Image (tube, rainbow, N blue to C red; front, top):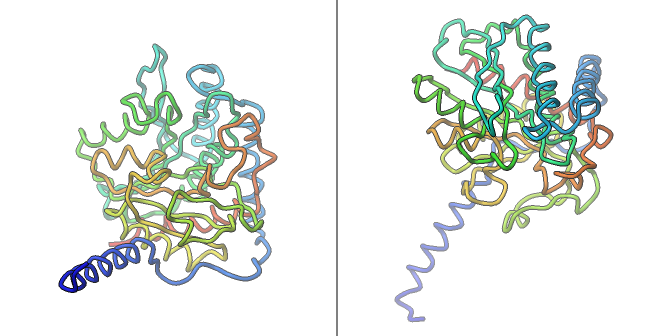
Length: 330
């Protein structure tokens, strides 16, 4: 290589390093040190989350279009608990494989900016052959608990909670994926969704060194112990990732990591937030990283007994404050 090319190569390397740094740089620091005991309120939350997961993945079990009766039982359970929290429940119905499938939604109307919507969602179907405790009974349990706790929140923006159907194959990233059906309708209606947050597999945590894996090259940049919750999105939504993780770190004594990286990297777009990207809405995923940590992911062993409920409760408690912050920001 000629000396005349060295400045060009140096600039390219600096730009590349700067780009990577921008993708992984997050405000403040992840929590370190001994985690304090659960508060009395978090103990109540822990039991609430456990009850939901036990029903969805223990009693109901595998729930998808092939196990349609179970899918309907799960939908009925979600409706009932939304109603018990004081909500009027709406359903968006559509057909998949000749069967009626429902997205289920409730909302807390915003007080000063009701047209601006902060949407918290999770899919309630499970993959074929799995009872789906972590994927995604954990996400649904969190949505139900957060909806109950925030029912009287009086947010500035509208808070909307949605349980999506048909996230798992064969519907993933197809026109019959429930969240994509929903996002398309929102776009057609001109709804102003300022942020969508997908809660995806958020119940599995480990203190075992080497328990965390990543798609290359992220393993060079992030911890090898799977004891943290992740805030994940594409580069375009990096400001939202930093916004939410900063709020979480202010409020939760629990490890957290964030990234805003190329959306085509394996795992980055693997949930319902992808559907909102497709329709031009800001969206991020909150996750335990699923298959990159949970050995029971998409297996018959994804059962309620493998959820780490104390950590799960800490995460959801922190997310409650995060959602309130976002819903009241200018």
